[in-house]
Image (tube, rainbow, N blue to C red; front, side, top):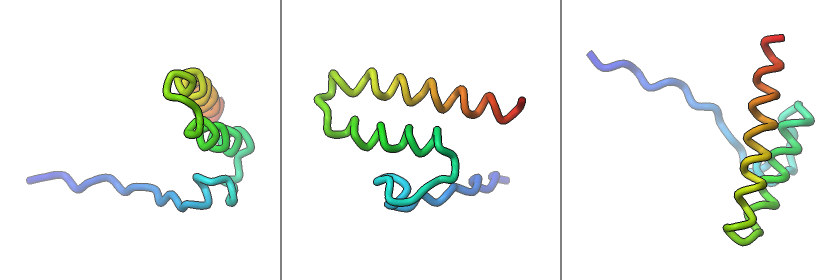
Length: 65
């Protein structure tokens, strides 16, 4: 028997371009920074992605507190 694939969250274009809100200010800021990072040279994107990863980790960790 094969296991069913887990349900996937829907991501609308508005969430990715910042015209819609996730309802969480830190997550919204990360999404805006990632959208801005896409316009940077690849070498400059790394710091943005690392910072976004850190904020998202901290945000998820705070849910358990």
